[in-house]
View 1 (cartoon, rainbow, N blue to C red):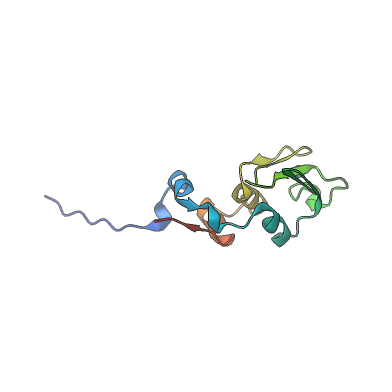
View 2: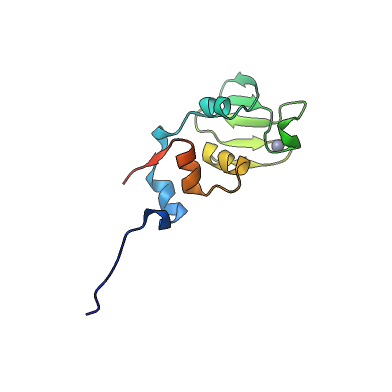
Length: 113
Ligand SMILES: [Zn+2]
């Protein structure tokens, strides 16, 4: 029998597994995140936060085109069409060099074992 020399390397865990292991409670709320990123909030109405989209026109659009859900952070920009299911996706669109794991850690989030 060949000896198995298996060393667990957490950085090699695929994103789809990481997604299940993510501790969502460890992430900032959508409102806190938007404040941290200096994304201009136009108004909060019910479930939706209306913001000036940071993903087109260098974040300097005249009217707010992006809607972000207050509770789970899913978002869509009605001008440039960018959308995603949580603030991790938004954070990665703003910072395209970040992988999923890096984006979570950058947000101060953590993973379950
Ligand atoms: Zn946009």
